[in-house]
Image 1 (spheres, rainbow, N blue to C red):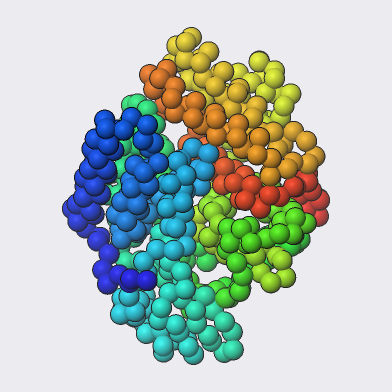
Image 2: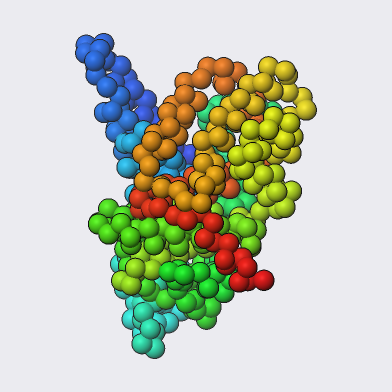
Length: 439
């Protein structure tokens, strides 16, 4: 794979790359509509494929928050066209890595030594590379280590990258007024946290200690003495990324066991710790040779305040969804309905969220849920298509919901998709035994 000797870090340079990408996409549309004039039956598949290719190629060299957006979008399998999902999913653990000289320079700057002097052995070629950092294999005192190195300039470019994306996001999601700033601030704050490897180290140590009693779940050991704000050293664990495992696995019972561990892990975090690993994509999980789930990245941890947690999970209860008084009350508590809404907006958004929650909360309405159920995910996909085509929705004020929805909904959406990939059947209340054991 081609390596990078330089990553654009200046605002003008990064903006230029995005403009160049936009021009390519525009050319693809011209070609598509020209072909459609000649052949009206031509589908959008080729257009989607070309756009996905060009957008990904533009973002992968920028890395950082620009590529992170692609990674987040790749999780939305029921909303994004498949061509985008396929291409953007590469950003989870397979993008062009930094060259060996740039890696050595990063070590010298942040740990004061070159990697070959710090470890017994160090593999100069990255084992995998994602949006914010890449991983190298090393050894020290007989231990196999995974060493994550952050790309230069990632933290410094977050604010300017988001400023470039903001006008497009406002139009895409129909956000209006200064209230939209709270959503962008939430994203910016979480991305900045992800670039702080000292914070990630502490979060990793805390989560490992707090969740160590969950069955069929494993964490790497961490090495603070070989870590810094831009470098993180941990135990190397052999295994398959979750997506690779799901594609190869023929043992339904094993898929169920991995899925149960994943569900228990997330429910324990949510209900006991009131903070959650908010980046549930396949690149952040492995399955080891013993059939255990391995969680390997804790850069994105979302704290869940009680004034959000309580109404959020009250709305997951079927009896509350079907009680108009309670349902309306919770919509206001969660900022889905606003005091300045018109009667038309109140009626419209009440119906939309009643339909949405009636479907999306089904896994919480029974003791067992089968995430291989194609009908369930098909209904989610249909609902996503209906929202995309809803002209009335575009006329409404899109500033809906607490800022905490951004990462909590993303967490559940990603979790559902991982469990669907595994075709897992889970006991939805199994995690409660860990709550009792921890008290």
